[in-house]
Length: 553
Image 1 (spheres, rainbow, N blue to C red):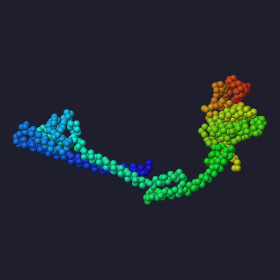
Image 2: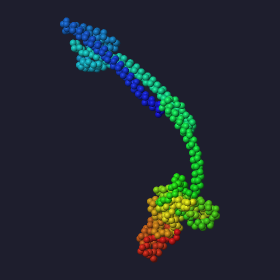
Image 3: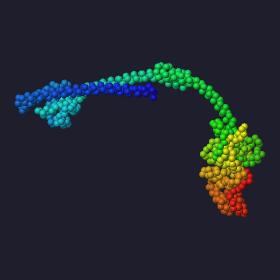
């Protein structure tokens, strides 16, 4: 809403109220005066008529004729003639009624309706002294009356209501016209002066819009008045001048920033080939934080191509490099899709982490999703390999979850953002166990606890990897199971429970054979049967804890 409109909305009601109050006061004074005069004039006629009637009747009494019907009628006729002489308008009527409301005397043509007689009879009984509004002959009349006992009359001096109030109505109409005219003139004058007062503000607004549309800060506004609006215009001109200077500086800084951003973009494009995008982002946001190591719980994934030496011997070097890059593109895309970053390439192996530098609540699940997607993507990759006449890539993936140390590690001249710790080494050992147990994907017990509610897992064995003394459970994991596989995995778990801690190797072997009946080529079940048969022949010591010690990496 414009300030001019606000000003009018504030001032105009005050002006209107003032004008209305003045007009209303004048109106009420005039109407009350006219009304008083009219009532007094009616009262005067009543007094004159009552005095005349009393004097006429006194003549009868003084002459002893009050019982003469002839002279009484003559006296009534005289009173009626006198009443007629008091009327001044064609609508004025002076009449008298008896106790039943019947018309006894009338100064002109007048007809009393049947339903009006009761009202007149009530007036006769009450003899009110105040101004009355009554319906006579179907017309509303205003009048006053008195009771004249010698004739048993109630005399009324009346005038039509429209005639009685016509002067008041005329004053009302003129007053309304005068009020409307005064309000109109006041409104026009108010709009004119508010327009002049707000013109400097409108000029400033228009200049600001032009500056916004053209970015030309050299424009100024005229100083029209020596008041607050003039001060505002002068201050506005100073402000635009200062803004123009600042704008030139900003353009220079923006140009320098654009050059710096272009350089940064080039650096990012170069480093993205060697350093994960999230790591680059974190470095540019807070370079000093990258120099501090920290302990963090995250998931570590190792993936390795089995028998890569044999594959490399079967392929031309250029073909090998090309296909290896295609393989890395697919696997790295999957890792990054699930929020992981590639820590490093170790020959044909990939080491990835989930949870650094950006941590997520579901890093464990993200890592397993990535591993499952990598297994499925390898199937399609190998179809393309066969179509080109190239050997297939067989991989093993190991994933662990635990506390590691993460940060920039290395020499002053060459540092890597990486993770170190036992959990990293264990993840590498799990990848190695995929070949031992002929599995595509093996996860640790700590990771299994995080994802068991999302994916079915199979307890493969409990082992101590090389360099460790404490046994850990290792698991296979699938995205989902069909009915036969689910049955086999359930039987397998019962066999593992009988194997350890049950030490019932015969029951365990029998159940592992049930797994082989469902899947005759299940390597894990066959290996566990061989282990059970060994323990049946040569039982393990009493302190045996069900752990198999691995001698190779």
